[in-house]
Length: 112
Image (cartoon, rainbow, N blue to C red; front, top):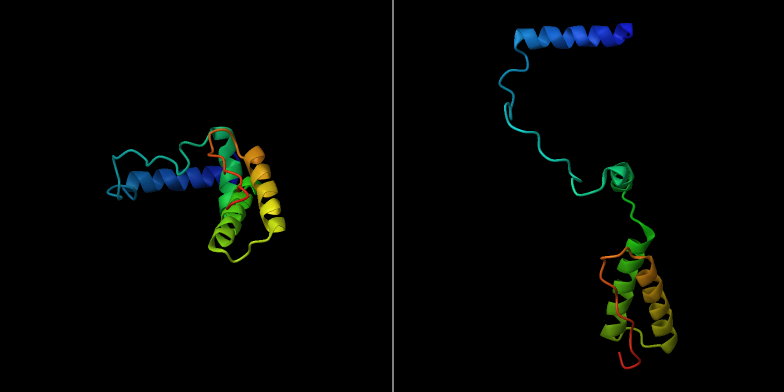
């Protein structure tokens, strides 16, 4: 151990012996599960970095954009055939990018 590490260990040991850690909230109870307990261990660091920087995988942001544009088309704000074709292309792209188990988005039909 380095000098700093041994100093820290000695101070922690002194505090334990003095009872500084007795009576803390949650004493004797199990630790809460990690926030991402269902995330595979090899992905936890990546997910925590994405959350910390308010980022998301491309398929998620594309899915949000697709839903926003679909709602606008269904409200009648835009009714061009070109917009529907672009939206269907992005829906297809989303469906190809989204991982297995994520519900697929249906393509727009000519009458929607």
